[in-house]
Image (cartoon, rainbow over all chains, first blue to last red; front, top):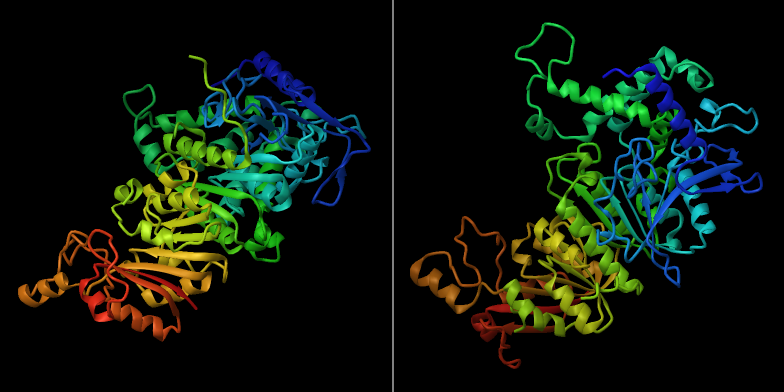
Length: 401
Length: 206
């Protein structure tokens, strides 16, 4: 798919507008409220963009933090300002949904290092007046969580009823439970793990190299003028997208079907539907995501290793944890396979934590957590409902007859 | 017999539940659809956790708000800390484990007490089938033929008592149940239990 230049310009400026002053609410933290980073430095000033749904109850006990995945954003249950698409988890979050906004006050924030309004490499560095690019210090999953904790403080919430998220969102859930055990009543990590595997790092590295190999990337300074590295970012997305789906799902959806043609063309056009599909995934992605953010956030995932952060023993991360956990994996997820979830469950058991573990049968791979998976919704609803009654959160008022 | 027990097809639930002190911490190994856990938490205010092999059972439990993980007695008990529960319950599962002795050791290690229930292979009906028909016994409670049964380590009540002695486990309470879950007279001798008990329930400690 090709874009007209003026389309590109319009999209690029819309995206930067969302970086600087997003359509969603934003909290600003001044020079006196730095965000400490694992890399050693601190970020100040900085900002965090978020959305909320539902109402915080009187004793402030019904807040649910939803953590987004690698290329997600704060628009879990509301329309995306650039793409106009409905929220990425609108099947999960909303009135009467498993994460029921009639019962819970749901918060979803863009991660630090992201590009939807929270400080990231596309943000303006106040010291230079230019966009950070690679001058932004590297960020980690723990940094993302620390930033969210400062937002939660700002919103006047001591303890979250639940922290929920899939993939990188699930990593944040685990990090929350380990870093702030007294602030998380229930934790629901989905399709995640306590570390990024060698294979996962390998795929991320391919994506990053694709971006950095694009001449338009200019050492990360593309936002200071010139074109954006959309070829590189698009290839990164194409490669990553393959890891989000399963081979059987690809086969049943596309097989070896040809795209708008009767026969192969003996050329390098997108003869096959799968090629056309991947190209489309790549080209739409560059409209809504920043290439440097992709580098930063993938790196944050690569660095994630909770056992290493706790003396080599994962169980140490959850010692005396008062949190109740529900770990969910999917049978066909080969990016975060069930064994990664099971390792978390074993560690939680060894730590004496209250844990449930469900593996859901699905042939749709890692992305299952974003899709219409009735069993996922049923388990999520059951777990949250059970935990909410223990926590003493009122069920939603019955609809008057 | 209550509805929960009926649904699960296990008539020892009430008997097992009666052995548990109110407000204690319980691990139910092989918890099925969570019937016993629910019974214990509603009736006795117990903090119950479960392990269940079948994924359907696990999902059902979690959707009902119970804390259950997918796993089995042979593979997943080793990760639990010593004394992390007041009771560990293994109901109708011991005979289906690969290594009953290690499983029993783990139960006694993880829980201050262990409650084990199992079908008695010494029951007269079993003995009759083996003796007179020369066939592996099939009963209403153990309906599968030898080649399809998940039960690979049958024992009698006498055998189980011997294993307890070998492991230095103390029998706090023991009982034999007839086919409908009724208790066989407490003062009956062991040989009587071993012959007429269809099920046995033991409360043990180290």
